[in-house]
Image (cartoon, rainbow, N blue to C red):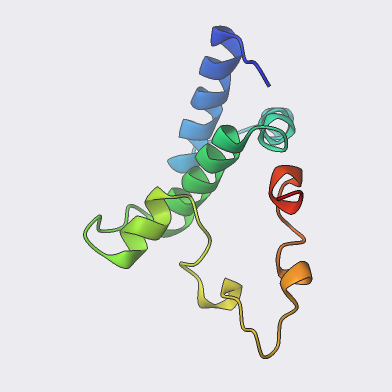
Length: 102
């Protein structure tokens, strides 16, 4: 999906405000989510912003810093995959379309 420079800057502004826990309207959140569903880069920006908002900046030398910099889930233990109790298809059910197609 091609983004204009104006759209990219608008999305980056919204994502930045999310990361520092500033006010973001519902319309702005929906706007970013719409692009995140179809663009892996924007999805990663949003994941990182939510992680920064929830957990603060993690030490870049540790595993939590790596997880956060990659925009991965995993800082909260309840989101870890447990092969004894979890079905892999269910575990990925909340992922964007581009992940589920992989």
